Image 1 (cartoon, rainbow, N blue to C red):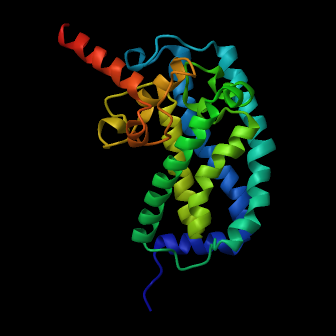
Image 2 (image 1 turned 90 degrees about the vertical axis):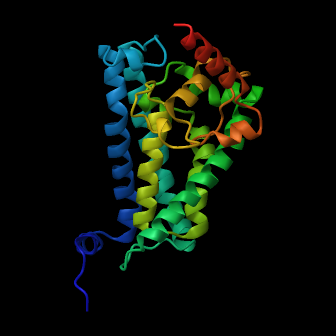
Image 3 (image 1 turned 180 degrees about the vertical axis):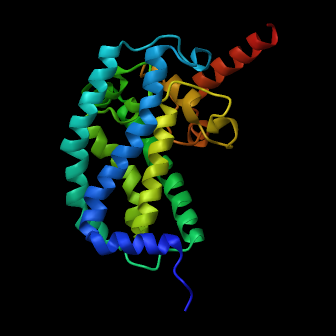
Amino acid sequence: MAAASPLDSAWECLIDNFSEFQLATVVTFLLHESVFFLSGIPSLLFERFGLFAKYKIQKKSNAPAYQNRCVLRLILYHVGVNLPVMIFSYPAFKFMGLRSSLPLPHWTVIVSQILFYFVLEDFIFYWGHRALHTKWLYKHVHSVHHEYATPFGLTSEYAHPAEILFLGFATIVGPALTGPHLITLWLWMVLRVLETVEAHSGYHFPWSPSNFLPLYGGSDFHDYHHRVLFTKSGNYASTFVYMDWLFGTDKGYRKIKAIEGEEGKHL
């Protein structure tokens, strides 16, 4: 019998000390909070102290009090909305096949499932987000997220509770369909959080993912969505650029990029 890998041993220790319910709810929540705030706080500090100013997409900055307001409301939303949703949705995930036992899935299974989640989430998010930009839904729901026309990482999850549930469906539908192992669900959550925090960071660095990953939108693509009027914003997709290209909702962004490119040639 082959010796257990360090990862297998660590996972066995985890499932020996916590029930699956605890892992899928409380530990998932704590993991989300850790990744979200640790990845989101840097851009807040960059903006507050004027760091990396040449990489900041917008020259405007949020006042410290406005940043603090966002953080406090996020904590309220996460504890009052996200945590209860995780707790009450556990039976549904269990019914759909979620498991935490050994053996762990092969890396090819994990990678293929997460790629499927990204593509499916992006498709559903695009249409849901586009619907939120209709007049009534924007006024009563989505305008909360757009209170921050100059986004920073933590604003990625600053939204009306109804929107958290509405667009949160796009994030969980993939895992619900495939019934993944809990480690796959965790990796998906971590990558999705890092992606949306980066897209809302307000900074476009030479090492930003969009400079290397084909079809990836990133901060420059999404920042445009925040800084123009809701009726003209476009760039509705969460991760990739092809949905907006296919349906012509990136024309304003492409026009501005073309103008910037022409201006750059004459400098």
